[in-house]
Structure formats: C-alpha cells, structure tokens
Image (cartoon, rainbow, N blue to C red; front, top):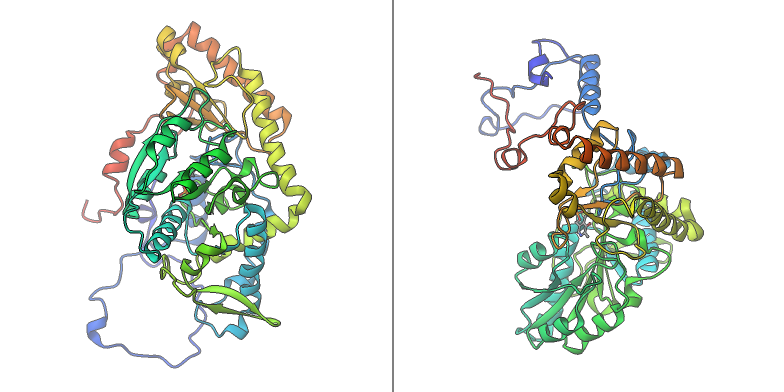
Length: 478
Ligand SMILES: *Cc1c(COP(=O)(O)O)cnc(C)c1O
C-alpha cells in the first residue's frame, strides 16, 4: 500500500489551526531550521482512508479472538476511553498551577488507594511507562534499600528460568547480576535450588505468580520466606495479575514491591506500541525511595511531595496520566464484586479451552491452569514436521490471532494461550474447532501448513531483518 509521503500532493491539506490570538514572537535566526520540514500534504479524507487501510491489514481485539498468552488482550470497555478523553484530563499542561488541576491529582490519589488495596501494598508510583520500566524501578527500590543500610554486598537478583525475558534484562539494567534458578517438574520454583542459590550476596528475587506457564506456585510463602531469611527482598512481576486480582494479593504472598501493567489488566489497549503504564507498588519501608513527585491529600486538597530518600525520576512528570484515568474508570465500573469476577472468568475461560484441546494437543502440564495454558507441539513437529509457528500462522486464516509462540523457553514448540475473561463460550468453542481442524490438516496435508497464512496481507515477514534493520525514514531521493 502507498505511504503517506507517496499520497502527498503540494498544497493539499487541512486547515485546522485557528488564527493566532497572542502576540507573535520572533526567534533568533540561529534557532530556526534552514528549510521547512517535508511533511506529507494530504486531505483529511485520504488520511482517514490511509489509516483505515492500515487497520485492515492487522488484527486487533475488535477484529476477533486474540489469545496472545502473557499479554492479556482483553476487550477494553469504551467507557474507559470516554473518561480519558474528557477535556479536563486532556487539555492540561504538566506545569499548570496545582489549584487548577485538583481533579487530576485526585485521580492519581484515588487510583493509588485502589491499587494498594488490590496488590496488598502501601504506596504506588505512576511514573513507569510500562511493565519492564516498572521492573527496573522496583529493582532500583531494592538497590536503594540495601544501600541505605550500607549493605553493599548484595549484588545478585534471583530469577526463575521460566521468567519473562524482561526480568533478567531489567535486573541487569539496574546493575545486578542475574542468578537463574531451575523450575521443578510442576513448573514452579525448585525450592532446593533456591535455597542453594541464596546467600549474603542476594539482593532479591523476581517472580511472577501465576508464572509464565500459567500455574500458581503453591510454595509461594516458603519461596518469599527463603529470600527474606537470606536478607533479600521480593519483587512481584504483576503482569499476570489478571489471574488473581480480587482473590490473592502479592503483598500477602510475601512480596515487598510489585509492578502492574495497566495496559494488560486495567483496560488500556495495547499491542500497537501505544502508551502503557507500569505503576510500581511497595510496602511502607520502601516508600521513601519511590520516584518523585508523589501525591498526598492535605485537608480537602491534593498536593505533590518528594519522598525523603527518593531515587529521583524514572520518567518526566507523572507518568502516562490518561492511562491511569482509564484504569481508575475500569476499577470503579467493575467495583469490588466485578474485579474478582473478572479474574475468575479469565481462569474459567482458560480451563474451558484447555479442556477442549487436551487429548488432541499435548499440554505442557496436565493440571488445572490459571488464566493461560501452554501447549507443547514437540511431538506433532516430530511426527508431521508441522511446527508451533505453522499452526500459529494458519490460525490467521481463520480470523484468529495466534497464541504466543516459543515462550516460555523451558517448553519446546510452545503455544501459550490466554483467552481472557471477555470471550464468550461461543468464541471459545469456535476457537477449539479451528485448533482441531488445523490438527487434522497437519496430519493430512502438512506441506500446505508450512506456507500458511494463505489469506493475509502479509504472510511470513523476515522478523529478524525487520527488527535489526527497520526502515524508519522515507527516502525522498529515490
Ligand atoms: C508483559 C510482561 C512483562 C513486561 O511488560 P511490558 O509492559 O511489556 O514492558 C513482564 N513480565 C510478564 C510476565 C509479562 O507478561
């Protein structure tokens, strides 16, 4: 399809700017660019068509089933978008006088109260822009804590081998050395290996529970105790909160700090690289180190304050504020009953679909799952040559987004399925039928599956080249 630059014609466009109603300011010539930027000139209708065409070439939650494991691609209610587009939230400046943005501060404060309740923490920062950024911030909290006590020998973070790739990456970014501990045969943490791994150099542990194979680790209290006994702190990767919210709290499992992906669990659309938010919650003893500023209530009004031993800033201003508005709307609209009902629905849907596929596809663990389950197509690949990638690509022909592929790394030929709570039994039944049909095809015509998808705008892009050598600039010269 044509790019905006290719659709551009000199002089075309839309005049949306009102006449200037403030005195004109002239800048020093040294500050001005030599020539005007070469922006596309295009009529509004053509611009609209361009983006509609782009949207048609991809698959979103509004197009169909999107069981992308680990990502919680649930439906985001429209009401959350509506509140986030109110002018009182969108038409403000981050440096506006506080008495003119009291409502916005109240949003941050109220959201903090609700998130601390849901996670079992005492304080929250909204600065981190995503989950991985939250992990980094949480690890800095752990580092600040040990440093404040003069405990400089604690340089290692323990991470289970099933962890999301961001965990070891964030730990490394935060200046720690990563120690990997193996999983046991149930996909949980191997307690003996954990005991052997801790010591006076242990700064902490990073763990998600339910873990990346969709199982709740029944030893969680013992795990966090082992770390605490060794003098370390426990960080909870809250990306899987959609499985447990309203039922169990990371704070009650023994964790000291946690991040939450508002763009997974709390109603912000994602997958297209839009703004996310990874607020970090912590227990009281870590709160003095949180990024500044934070919001507090003083009488009837709200104000900012800097925590005493703040790590500084991890991002400009107050984080992705409108994402917080959506999360607050979502939590308030679901309410105290709706939040646990949502996670119960997510777990029920995952078990329903898993049960329909078990016996046909091999499950990596034959037990009840939480909000997602992992299949291993190792035997299918061995018997027919059809891989997890082939099955994933074929699903696209049926209007389904593929599950997450080849993750977690501890499962071979993995497909990780997360239906989420917003899917109906009919959708899940249809999805199961498609999975079983593809299994038939794998046995009768494996060759054709290697070339799937057959009906999509793009089939099998060279992902490595796309990631390593992305074309991000328009070449006017060509
Ligand atoms: C998504 C995810 C993350 C990272 O979150 P981002 O918002 O993508 O940075 C971390 N851990 C787990 C388990 C996840 O699923």
